[in-house]
Each structure stands twice: as C-alpha cells, then as structure tokens.
Length: 282
Image 1 (cartoon, rainbow, N blue to C red):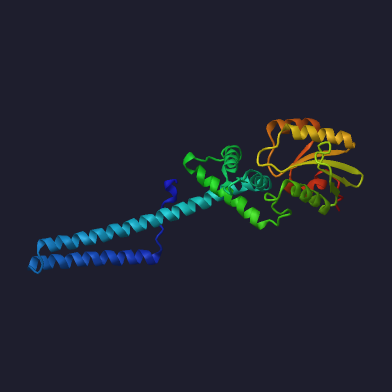
Image 2 (cartoon, helix red, strand yellow):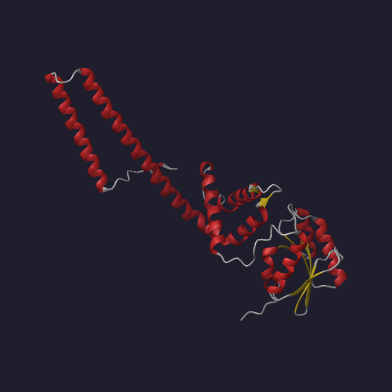
C-alpha cells in the first residue's frame, strides 16, 4: 500500500488524550527524580520506573501505528474498489455464469474453486490490469474485490433457475425441458436414449429446436456438437444446441461457431427464445 494513504488519523479527543498522557509522564519523571535526589528511592527503582514508562509508551505507539495502518488499508481498499467496480460491473452476468460452470463438487463432496480462480486471474489480467496499474503485491486484493462483487450480485439478483448440479443426468434432461416449457417453448424429452443425438425437442411458434443435454463434471467435447448437427438434419429443425452444467472444449466451440450450433449453460435456457429473437417486445 502506498505511503500516501498512511497518515495521522487521530481525532481531537485522541490528540487531547495523548497530550494529557505525555504531561503525566513528564510529571511522574520529575517526581521520581526528586525522590531519587531525596534518597526515597534508589537508582535501581528509578530505572525500573523509567523502563516501565518506556514500555507503556512503546505499547501505545504500536497500537497507534497498527490503527493507522488499518485505516490506511481500509482507505486504500475503498479507493481500489472505486477503480475496479466500473470495470467489473458490465461483465457480472458472464462472471456469474462462469462461477456456476467452473466451481465444481468432486465425488467426495469437496468444492473445487481452482478452475474459477484461474478464470478470475485471466479476467483481472485482461480487463483490469490492462486499464489500471495494479502492482503484483495487491493483485490478490483485486481478486478479492472481484469475487465479492460477483457474490453480492449473485445474492441481490433474483435467480431464474435453481441449481441443478446435484440432479441425475436423466433428471437433468427433464429439468432442462421444464425450463424451456416455462419460458414459452413446447418441449419434451425424447423417449429413446440417444435418439439421433437428441435429448430434447422443442418448438416456439413455427421454430423447431433440438437439444443435446450433457450433465458432465468435465468440459463437453466435440462429439456432442457433431451429434446434434446430425440430429438437426434428421429432425429438419431450425435450431440446434448443446446444453450442459459445465463448460465446452475449445474444439467444441470452434465447430459450434462454424456450424451455428448454440452452446448453452442450463441457466441460459429461460432467455434462449429472446436470444433467438422469438419473443415479441412492446
């Protein structure tokens, strides 16, 4: 933290108390010198009293320095938040989605934050450090601020979708179909497992969409995109998408971009019709 933030933060009452304590120490020292001169105390007692006063003064000084440092860190954090917040705010929707995709629970019930932290570091590098000067020694403070902003946004935003990470793969298909039905689609889960790579078929007006639904703990790969491309042709559908609770590999994204397949996190399903331009707006 820059030394410009460290300053004497004493209020008038504290200044008055400090002066009073200093005056008392001076008077006590004078009394001890008089007692030593009169032989009421010996030199050892005199030095013991001096040492006790010095230790007390040192303790008071350390407490004050700690308070000043705490105030400086708080002030510095507030200034840092003011700089970081406008750079994070436009991306909170996407960052929250990344959190849902990348924070994983392993087979033993342990929460794995490592993938999300890696994503946060990437975000800070590309979207914050490229715009403001962030010394390496406070980068973790910036990460903490970004994580707090995401947490606050998550808790202050009414969720459209409940967490589906704990449901079975079969139930996940039905939950995704329900999300589509709740947002204006007419959707059904296909009865045959792996029916031409299609798990859910849905219509919105005259638009037919086919979905492959993947409940994975790892990124979804290229094969899912290939299968839904075939399913789209088989059903003569207008739209094809792969839906997951996870993320997608680079090759899956590349193929999807080239073929017009949508890659979705399940939390994006309620807004999918709007994304396609199917929802009439006033």
